[in-house]
Image 1: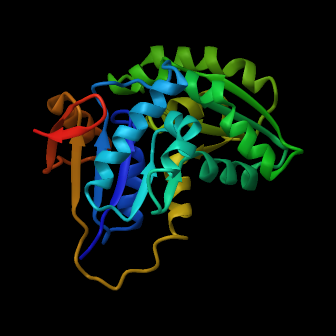
Image 2 (image 1 turned 60 degrees about the horizontal axis):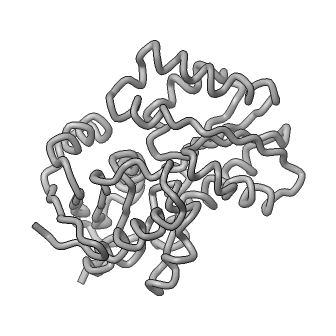
Amino acid sequence: MKRPIGVFDSGVGGLTVFKAIRERFPKEDIIYFGDTARVPYGPKSPQTIINYSLQNARFLLQQNIKILVVACNTSSAVAIPALQKLTEIPLIGVIHPGAEQAVLNTKKKRVGVIGTEGTIRSGAYSDAICALDPAIEVVSVACPLFVPLAEEGWQDHSSAHNIAKEYLGPMLQMDIDVLVLGCTHYPLLKDTIQSVVGESVKLVDSAEAITVYLERYLPPDGNETPGQSSFFVSDSEEKFGKLAHRILGQEIRSLKTVRLYESWFVDR
Protein backbone atom coordinates (compact mmCIF):
# COMPACT_ATOMS: atom_id res chain seq x y z
CA MET A 1 0.00 0.00 0.00
CA LYS A 2 1.30 3.45 -0.98
CA ARG A 3 1.79 5.59 2.14
CA PRO A 4 1.55 9.39 1.86
CA ILE A 5 3.75 12.23 3.04
CA GLY A 6 2.03 14.26 5.76
CA VAL A 7 2.46 18.04 5.91
CA PHE A 8 1.01 20.41 8.49
CA ASP A 9 1.07 24.17 8.90
CA SER A 10 -0.73 26.76 11.00
CA GLY A 11 -2.70 27.85 7.93
CA VAL A 12 -2.24 28.37 4.20
CA GLY A 13 1.43 29.40 4.24
CA GLY A 14 2.56 25.78 4.26
CA LEU A 15 1.09 25.40 0.79
CA THR A 16 4.35 26.91 -0.46
CA VAL A 17 6.04 23.83 1.04
CA PHE A 18 3.35 21.53 -0.37
CA LYS A 19 3.81 23.04 -3.84
CA ALA A 20 7.57 22.58 -3.77
CA ILE A 21 7.23 18.94 -2.63
CA ARG A 22 4.58 18.20 -5.24
CA GLU A 23 6.75 19.62 -8.04
CA ARG A 24 9.84 17.70 -6.92
CA PHE A 25 8.01 14.42 -6.10
CA PRO A 26 5.08 14.18 -8.55
CA LYS A 27 4.43 10.49 -7.84
CA GLU A 28 4.11 10.80 -4.07
CA ASP A 29 0.76 10.99 -2.29
CA ILE A 30 0.59 14.03 0.00
CA ILE A 31 -1.84 14.90 2.79
CA TYR A 32 -1.88 18.53 3.93
CA PHE A 33 -3.43 19.85 7.12
CA GLY A 34 -3.82 23.59 7.74
CA ASP A 35 -4.87 24.64 11.24
CA THR A 36 -6.83 27.62 9.92
CA ALA A 37 -9.01 27.87 13.05
CA ARG A 38 -6.01 28.78 15.22
CA VAL A 39 -3.67 30.69 12.89
CA PRO A 40 -1.37 32.53 13.56
CA TYR A 41 0.91 30.49 15.83
CA GLY A 42 3.65 33.13 16.06
CA PRO A 43 2.29 35.23 18.96
CA LYS A 44 1.22 32.22 21.04
CA SER A 45 3.09 30.74 24.01
CA PRO A 46 5.55 27.87 23.45
CA GLN A 47 3.31 25.39 25.33
CA THR A 48 0.28 26.31 23.24
CA ILE A 49 2.30 25.88 20.05
CA ILE A 50 3.46 22.46 21.26
CA ASN A 51 -0.11 21.41 22.10
CA TYR A 52 -1.43 22.49 18.70
CA SER A 53 1.46 20.81 16.90
CA LEU A 54 0.89 17.52 18.72
CA GLN A 55 -2.79 17.57 17.74
CA ASN A 56 -1.92 18.26 14.12
CA ALA A 57 0.61 15.44 14.07
CA ARG A 58 -1.80 12.96 15.68
CA PHE A 59 -4.35 13.65 12.98
CA LEU A 60 -1.83 13.04 10.20
CA LEU A 61 -0.46 9.91 11.87
CA GLN A 62 -3.99 8.49 11.72
CA GLN A 63 -3.68 8.74 7.94
CA ASN A 64 -0.81 6.20 7.90
CA ILE A 65 1.78 8.69 6.67
CA LYS A 66 5.40 7.61 6.09
CA ILE A 67 7.07 11.02 6.64
CA LEU A 68 5.89 14.00 8.69
CA VAL A 69 6.86 17.43 7.38
CA VAL A 70 6.37 20.29 9.83
CA ALA A 71 5.93 23.16 7.38
CA CYS A 72 5.22 25.73 10.09
CA ASN A 73 8.43 27.50 11.12
CA THR A 74 7.05 28.34 14.56
CA SER A 75 6.17 24.70 15.23
CA SER A 76 9.55 23.60 13.86
CA ALA A 77 11.30 26.04 16.18
CA VAL A 78 9.39 25.06 19.32
CA ALA A 79 7.72 21.66 19.04
CA ILE A 80 10.11 19.24 17.29
CA PRO A 81 11.37 17.52 20.50
CA ALA A 82 7.78 16.87 21.62
CA LEU A 83 6.77 15.64 18.17
CA GLN A 84 9.69 13.21 18.00
CA LYS A 85 8.24 11.37 20.99
CA LEU A 86 5.03 10.64 19.06
CA THR A 87 6.39 8.55 16.24
CA GLU A 88 9.38 6.71 14.78
CA ILE A 89 8.74 7.77 11.18
CA PRO A 90 11.04 10.47 9.72
CA LEU A 91 10.15 13.92 11.04
CA ILE A 92 11.36 16.96 9.13
CA GLY A 93 11.02 20.57 10.22
CA VAL A 94 11.95 23.57 8.11
CA ILE A 95 14.64 25.03 10.39
CA HIS A 96 17.62 22.80 9.58
CA PRO A 97 17.05 22.67 5.80
CA GLY A 98 16.86 26.48 5.76
CA ALA A 99 19.93 26.81 7.96
CA GLU A 100 21.93 24.49 5.70
CA GLN A 101 21.07 26.55 2.61
CA ALA A 102 21.98 29.78 4.41
CA VAL A 103 25.41 28.43 5.34
CA LEU A 104 26.03 27.16 1.81
CA ASN A 105 25.13 30.49 0.21
CA THR A 106 26.73 33.13 2.44
CA LYS A 107 30.12 34.50 1.43
CA LYS A 108 30.26 37.44 3.84
CA LYS A 109 29.21 35.22 6.77
CA ARG A 110 26.42 37.63 7.62
CA VAL A 111 22.96 36.08 7.48
CA GLY A 112 19.59 37.65 8.14
CA VAL A 113 16.56 35.70 9.39
CA ILE A 114 12.98 36.93 9.34
CA GLY A 115 10.07 35.08 10.89
CA THR A 116 7.14 35.21 13.27
CA GLU A 117 7.54 36.40 16.83
CA GLY A 118 7.58 32.80 18.08
CA THR A 119 10.24 31.66 15.61
CA ILE A 120 12.54 34.62 16.26
CA ARG A 121 12.02 34.43 20.04
CA SER A 122 13.10 30.78 20.02
CA GLY A 123 16.47 31.55 18.42
CA ALA A 124 16.18 28.27 16.51
CA TYR A 125 17.56 29.55 13.21
CA SER A 126 20.47 31.34 14.85
CA ASP A 127 21.32 28.22 16.83
CA ALA A 128 21.10 25.96 13.78
CA ILE A 129 23.17 28.26 11.56
CA CYS A 130 25.86 28.83 14.18
CA ALA A 131 26.03 25.11 14.93
CA LEU A 132 26.96 24.55 11.28
CA ASP A 133 29.38 27.51 11.12
CA PRO A 134 30.15 29.40 14.35
CA ALA A 135 31.86 32.18 12.35
CA ILE A 136 28.55 33.32 10.84
CA GLU A 137 26.91 36.41 12.30
CA VAL A 138 23.11 36.13 12.37
CA VAL A 139 20.70 39.04 12.71
CA SER A 140 17.03 38.18 13.27
CA VAL A 141 13.90 40.30 12.93
CA ALA A 142 10.25 39.39 13.61
CA CYS A 143 7.91 40.50 10.80
CA PRO A 144 4.39 39.71 12.10
CA LEU A 145 2.55 41.88 9.55
CA PHE A 146 3.81 39.81 6.62
CA VAL A 147 1.40 36.96 7.40
CA PRO A 148 -1.86 38.97 7.17
CA LEU A 149 -0.53 40.79 4.09
CA ALA A 150 0.07 37.44 2.37
CA GLU A 151 -3.30 36.02 3.40
CA GLU A 152 -5.12 39.11 2.15
CA GLY A 153 -3.35 38.88 -1.20
CA TRP A 154 -1.60 42.22 -0.63
CA GLN A 155 1.92 40.95 -1.29
CA ASP A 156 2.37 43.36 -4.21
CA HIS A 157 0.59 46.31 -2.56
CA SER A 158 2.53 49.50 -1.84
CA SER A 159 1.81 48.99 1.87
CA ALA A 160 3.66 45.65 1.75
CA HIS A 161 6.68 47.39 0.22
CA ASN A 162 6.65 50.12 2.88
CA ILE A 163 6.31 47.62 5.73
CA ALA A 164 9.14 45.53 4.28
CA LYS A 165 11.38 48.61 4.20
CA GLU A 166 10.64 49.27 7.87
CA TYR A 167 11.35 45.68 8.90
CA LEU A 168 14.42 45.09 6.72
CA GLY A 169 16.15 48.48 6.83
CA PRO A 170 18.15 47.85 10.04
CA MET A 171 19.09 44.39 8.78
CA LEU A 172 20.53 45.78 5.54
CA GLN A 173 22.79 48.08 7.56
CA MET A 174 24.46 44.87 8.80
CA ASP A 175 25.51 44.14 5.18
CA ILE A 176 23.94 40.67 5.00
CA ASP A 177 24.26 38.64 1.80
CA VAL A 178 21.69 35.91 2.66
CA LEU A 179 18.18 36.34 4.03
CA VAL A 180 16.27 33.32 5.34
CA LEU A 181 12.50 33.55 4.84
CA GLY A 182 11.69 31.90 8.15
CA CYS A 183 7.94 31.62 7.68
CA THR A 184 6.06 29.69 5.02
CA HIS A 185 3.94 32.75 4.21
CA TYR A 186 6.95 34.87 3.36
CA PRO A 187 7.74 33.32 -0.05
CA LEU A 188 4.41 34.80 -1.16
CA LEU A 189 6.05 38.21 -0.63
CA LYS A 190 9.34 37.14 -2.23
CA ASP A 191 9.27 39.71 -5.05
CA THR A 192 8.54 42.56 -2.63
CA ILE A 193 11.21 41.42 -0.18
CA GLN A 194 13.78 41.00 -2.98
CA SER A 195 13.05 44.50 -4.28
CA VAL A 196 13.77 45.93 -0.82
CA VAL A 197 16.96 43.98 -0.05
CA GLY A 198 18.34 44.08 -3.60
CA GLU A 199 19.58 41.38 -5.95
CA SER A 200 22.90 41.04 -4.10
CA VAL A 201 21.08 39.36 -1.18
CA LYS A 202 20.23 35.70 -1.70
CA LEU A 203 16.80 34.70 -0.39
CA VAL A 204 16.56 31.26 1.18
CA ASP A 205 13.07 29.84 0.74
CA SER A 206 12.33 27.16 3.34
CA ALA A 207 9.92 25.49 0.92
CA GLU A 208 12.67 24.94 -1.64
CA ALA A 209 15.20 23.98 1.03
CA ILE A 210 13.01 21.23 2.42
CA THR A 211 12.69 19.45 -0.94
CA VAL A 212 16.48 19.12 -1.06
CA TYR A 213 16.36 17.66 2.44
CA LEU A 214 13.54 15.25 1.53
CA GLU A 215 15.66 13.63 -1.19
CA ARG A 216 17.59 11.90 1.59
CA TYR A 217 14.43 10.03 2.60
CA LEU A 218 12.67 9.51 -0.74
CA PRO A 219 14.60 7.42 -3.29
CA PRO A 220 13.55 7.63 -6.95
CA ASP A 221 10.11 6.05 -7.39
CA GLY A 222 9.61 3.75 -10.37
CA ASN A 223 5.83 4.00 -10.02
CA GLU A 224 4.29 5.79 -13.00
CA THR A 225 1.04 6.68 -11.20
CA PRO A 226 0.72 10.40 -10.43
CA GLY A 227 0.52 11.15 -6.72
CA GLN A 228 -2.76 12.07 -5.06
CA SER A 229 -3.22 15.22 -2.97
CA SER A 230 -5.64 15.61 -0.07
CA PHE A 231 -6.27 18.73 1.98
CA PHE A 232 -7.77 19.19 5.44
CA VAL A 233 -8.41 22.36 7.42
CA SER A 234 -9.79 23.13 10.87
CA ASP A 235 -11.94 26.05 9.64
CA SER A 236 -12.93 28.20 6.64
CA GLU A 237 -12.87 25.79 3.71
CA GLU A 238 -14.00 28.49 1.30
CA LYS A 239 -11.29 30.99 2.25
CA PHE A 240 -8.62 28.29 2.24
CA GLY A 241 -9.75 27.13 -1.19
CA LYS A 242 -9.45 30.65 -2.63
CA LEU A 243 -6.01 31.21 -1.14
CA ALA A 244 -4.88 27.76 -2.23
CA HIS A 245 -5.96 28.51 -5.79
CA ARG A 246 -3.83 31.64 -5.77
CA ILE A 247 -0.78 29.90 -4.28
CA LEU A 248 -0.96 26.66 -6.27
CA GLY A 249 -2.34 28.09 -9.49
CA GLN A 250 -5.14 25.54 -9.60
CA GLU A 251 -8.28 24.53 -7.74
CA ILE A 252 -7.95 21.82 -5.12
CA ARG A 253 -10.38 18.93 -5.47
CA SER A 254 -10.11 17.11 -2.16
CA LEU A 255 -10.74 19.49 0.77
CA LYS A 256 -12.40 18.62 4.07
CA THR A 257 -12.87 20.33 7.42
CA VAL A 258 -12.10 18.53 10.66
CA ARG A 259 -13.63 19.58 13.99
CA LEU A 260 -11.31 20.56 16.79
CA TYR A 261 -11.46 18.84 20.16
CA GLU A 262 -9.26 19.36 23.19
CA SER A 263 -6.75 16.71 22.25
CA TRP A 264 -7.88 15.27 18.92
CA PHE A 265 -9.41 15.89 15.54
CA VAL A 266 -12.53 14.13 14.27
CA ASP A 267 -13.49 14.11 10.60
CA ARG A 268 -16.73 15.97 9.93
